[in-house]
Image 1: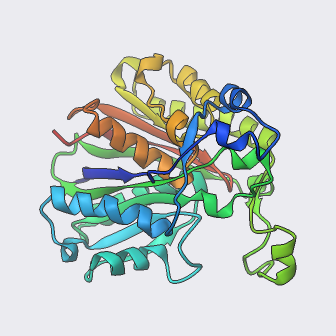
Image 2 (image 1 turned 180 degrees about the vertical axis):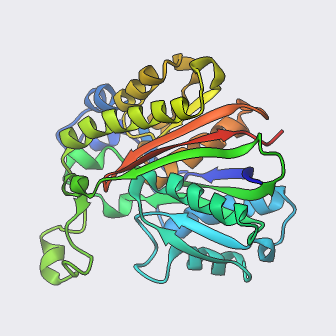
Length: 328
């Protein structure tokens, strides 16, 4: 028995922030941002929290599948921007949607969070203990960005997506293989200084602006170019996949140059790579489910298509998952 994605949806806020919006706030320009990242615009949530990015996604999934909230068995939310430190964002989403029979939890793996969640969700379904598991990836990155730091403020956006996992007796479809990694030695290159138990929140930490994303961009870029490309190639080799076998690479949307390095390592044509970083920026755990959902809703994938999802993020965390699409 395999776990298949039986439904998918995404949501991004309506508030569009073009690159030009930053020009009178930071020493930057539309050209500088485009040429270095591929980002043209992103979305910022004007009010609400991360759970509000997921509620519309899950509502759409329930409606499309003709399910009631109590039909959901478990919910996994991958995020680094939960509504609160606790309770979990998963619990907040459960409450808002009335999914009274679902248990769940949050998962913190930054940009690789959705892939980590997909691995766990698939295992829950394949154990036969749970029939319907929601795996979500969402981040409200605007809530943890320093508006005075041009190296991070222009890179990120808000958004999220969700998939419903269900069992299938056809082993030819669904989540077929995965390779997930972590190297904590990279943690000092992308992190938040304060707000955890190592450095609790104080008036001083707030005054020192220690609750924002800190990134050594060059170090992260170098590691991501290698990590994401190599793990994507590894998943191909493990499954005897050639470039012609793959319908789509769905990569984490952090930087066009990282995506292109992965594409070249896999030997794929540019037309087989899903790219939407230009519209949304880096939504962290939200990028892959948003991209996958857009592919599906734009009718660019069909049943039987072979997909590779690949990511790299803070931690360091990285990985790739091989899926054979099961929705008509």
